[in-house]
Image (cartoon, rainbow, N blue to C red):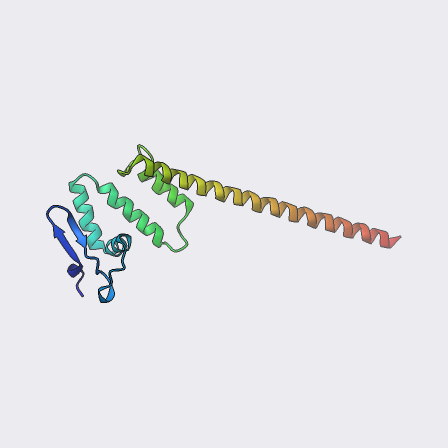
Length: 153
């Protein structure tokens, strides 16, 4: 099948993916799945980028591209990279601030903050466990030394 068979262009609403995108005419694809399938194509991303440049909205495609690659980096998606995306596209007065509602912006910022706090708490808990284990080992070693001293008597 040709990818173009799944697309249509309307003068009023622009580019559309037909719901039957997929195998055997399945209509089970959600709009997000369709978007992800289309966004995998460098040609479609290029088309979107050119369109957005003409409408002075290229940061949206750049943001989507960053997020797309972030999600696909199997295990390489880092908190630092998420913060980079946040700083570049999400926060108010960001270098390439995207046009989203303040409610969505606030929720996204809060989510990343919450994730950061959770990770920091987890690090602190691990450190406390390590310190307790080390303290127990030292106490056990001291007890063993004292037991050895008692045996010498």
